[in-house]
Length: 119
Picture 1 (cartoon, rainbow, N blue to C red):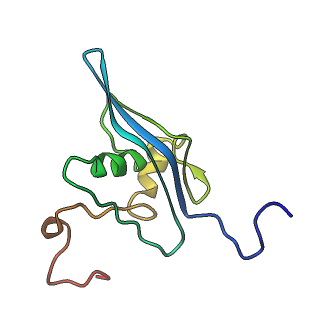
Picture 2 (picture 1 turned 180 degrees about the horizontal axis):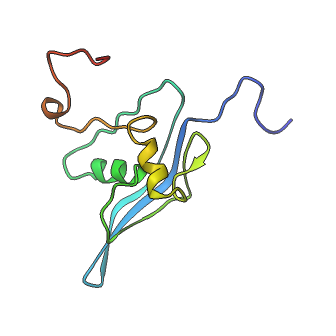
């Protein structure tokens, strides 16, 4: 038997072989080298690594927030079955915050220590 079983659902988000490139003055630099991950409904993904390991660049690439001049390549980038690489700016804007979000690496600027996470 092939295909998905009855109790198996597709991941909420899938990223396969994501690479990010910066082209400056005719020189191309690879900033992210082929990362892959998937997130199931109800899961939280934490990307950790040393300073300068492109955690933020990877997250911004998935969320469609990279500045001009930076190119991304991925075999797959989907959220709830939607191909993130083909969505327009307005469609991506509607996903951000409601469906896709990130907490930046400096917790004191991202989280209020006197408020609960739920709040």
